[in-house]
Length: 476
Ligand code: NAD
Image 1 (cartoon, rainbow, N blue to C red):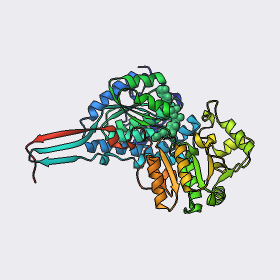
Image 2 (cartoon, rainbow, N blue to C red; image 1 turned 135 degrees about the horizontal axis):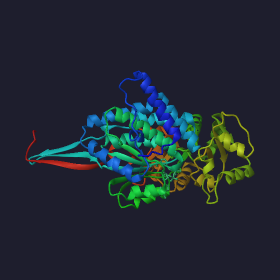
Image 3 (cartoon, rainbow, N blue to C red; image 1 turned 60 degrees about the horizontal axis):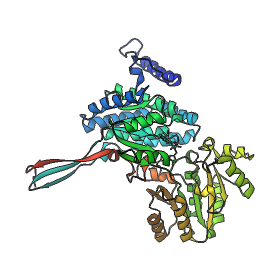
Image 4 (tube, protein in one colour; image 1 turned 45 degrees about the horizontal axis):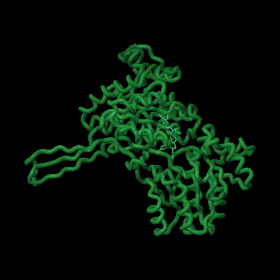
């Protein structure tokens, strides 16, 4: 079979094999990979991906939960291996030109360490005079997962753990701009899984991702469930597919700060959350509504925490025209770039310690109303907390994705939680606390607001089935 594997990915794999051979002692039992084996889950065509995934799922279906958990642990260890972790984080930043290496490390580590495993799949039982019925979370089969440029490796790690824990195999359709990075990760995981005795190709992807390949995946009767993590277009597409689909769509998370908050801490949290991975996480703070009485003090503290303030209108509008496209959305080449890089493009040079650009604008400004995914955070001055909550509600646009509030007023915190109905609502912390990074809870990189699964976990990718034994095993 001819393989068209990326030379860069191939070089990495070959060096891994050589390293392993050396560790084992050259000439000992470690076999040289065959041509077919070097595919390691990355196939030239979508139909090959789906067929291989189907075959793997037929084997996986009959494994015990403990065995599935063992393979989940292999995924965790492989990703947490220092070399793999650094390689995938670096490749993601270099290939997509989005985000920060240090933050990719944090996100990939969180996904590998803390994504829930089979412990998530609890069984319910009901017993009575007529016997026993079990309600269990069972596999869907082959799942098709479409992943974004903004979290290419995080989503593959997180989805793979959840889906395999649930007894499913997965065909990924990564963003074409994250092709090499995704292929590196898929092949690295398959190598490790196969070595530990797992069936080949539990995780697959097509060598050259494209809209046509994604469409083929969505149409295949062998793919039983679809998951889309991305913007509104792809979420709508999978929800119109006629299959069970999970949609994890865009957000525009607002932050409200009122006069009862710890302003110094709020400033630090907002800067940390909003600048994390250069603002690309869908949960990251995208606009602030602060009450007038603490507004200036908040701004001063945000500057002290690593933000650069643009004061004059003309520069704000210049910035908007540079980073936005003709449709009023973000210009792709500025998504996930650093504050230093963006400021440089409008003729402002700052130190590397500046991670966020801030400015006061009115609530109608497109910086407030548009999900830009850049470290640019507009602040809106509000008369009081009720107005701030109302304006936050408007700017979230009904995505019901994420929101943050800094306050000690329980009534107002409750009001915001009720009104916005976001999947994630963080109180008195940075947005990433909602993903279990410095907060309780667990990480997911597929936050399914539109379809209601919320922070997806293995059970989100399972079918609930019942198994009845008539008239027996009621032992009460
Ligand atoms: P995107 O929508 O451009 O791409 C997402 C994926 O969908 C990619 O793999 C892309 O190739 C594919 N795609 C897009 N349109 C398609 C079409 N018509 N047919 C087939 N495939 C198509 O998004 P992106 O820029 O990569 O990611 C950023 C967006 O994703 C933001 O809006 C962000 O909020 C959102 N996001 C949401 C979550 C969540 O968990 N809810 C997580 C990460 C990102």
